[in-house]
Picture 1 (tube, rainbow, N blue to C red):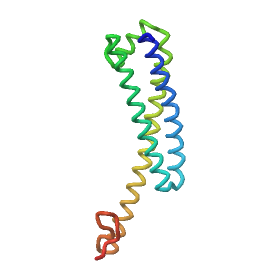
Picture 2: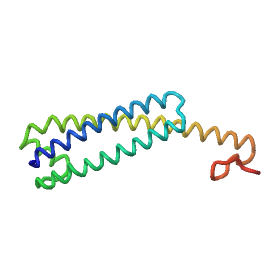
Picture 3: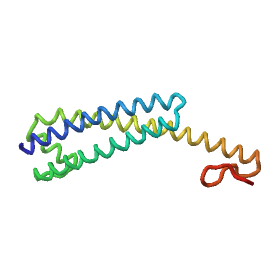
Length: 145
C-alpha cells in the first residue's frame, strides 16, 4: 500500500470515528439538557475518553505518514500533499469540518457542565452559610461537627 493510499485510509478512519464521536456528543448534550444521572454521565465520560484515545492514535498515524512523505505533520504539510494528490482534498476537508463540529459541541457541553458545577457550588455555599459550618468533609461525606 502506498503512503497516499494509507493516508487516505487513515483520514477515512478518522472521519468515521469523528462521526461516531459527534453522535456521542449530541447524545451527551441531550442528556445534559435533562436531569442526568451520575452513572449516565460517567458512562459518557468513559466513552468520550476512549474516542479521544483512538482519535489520538489515528492522528499520530496520520502524522507519521506525512513525515514518511517528507512533509510536516501540520496543516501546511496536508495542504502540500493535497496539492500533489488532489483526490485527498475532499477527505481532509470532511475531516476538518467534522473536527470543528466536534470541538464546538464539546465546548458547548463543557459550558453546560460548568453551569451545573457553579450552581451546585453556590447551593453548597448557601447551605454552609445557613448552617454555620462545613456540611461535607473533603471526601464528600457529612461532617460530624
